[in-house]
Amino acid sequence: MYSQAFRQLNILVLHGPNLNLLGKREPLIYGSVTLDSINRLLTEEADIIGIRIECLQSNHEGVLIDAIHDSCDKYQGIMINAGAYTHTSIAIRDALSAVKVPTVEVHLSNIYQREPFRHHSYIAAVAIGQISGFGAQSYKLGLHALVDHLRNER
Ligand code: DQA
Image (tube, rainbow, N blue to C red; front, side):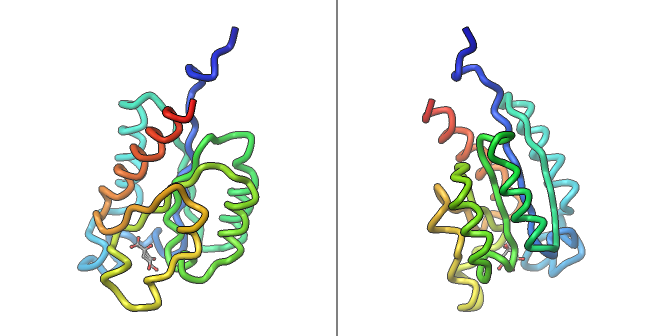
């Protein structure tokens, strides 16, 4: 009999606008690590904890929304750094709310120590939780938090 407990967890990692520029972009704020290095770090971590991840970066809101819609049957969880869409996109929030795939929100920088317009996240209210301010480590912490949540749910 196929057991839920042993089903492989598949996690979708979504990176929003401008995160393709990591490494070159405002390194004092975002660090010198590239997006490829973050994805590699996450893939290594995924192997260690026995899950699968798929990473997608887009500068386009609609592409991120399509990926969220398509995540329903393929992924048990989503980790998202929506970049500036965090602070503007009711559409991404509505997509996450519609599909109900458990989601963790992450940010490299501590958005609450920055400009006031970054203090509000449209995603936070539909996420399990948020990790912000630990640089590339935010993603690793976010992945562990999401996987722990999903494993404890079963
Ligand atoms: C960010 C924070 C956002 O305010 C900003 O627009 C980004 C990156 C972060 O990871 O710290 O693009 O999401």
